[in-house]
Image (cartoon, rainbow, N blue to C red):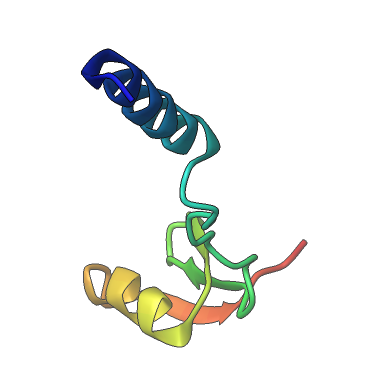
Length: 72
């Protein structure tokens, strides 16, 4: 094989790898599972949050707020 042919095949292989990708999908965020909202005394509602921890973190900034299931 000539050097030019080897280079062509290597380039084609790299191009094929780039076009096909690794085959792994990026992790996706799960659908809202806990469905918790922060209810504030002024009537404002924040959320929904996936976990109790996320809801609690949002509530920490508003001490009078309360984490409970979101109403539809």
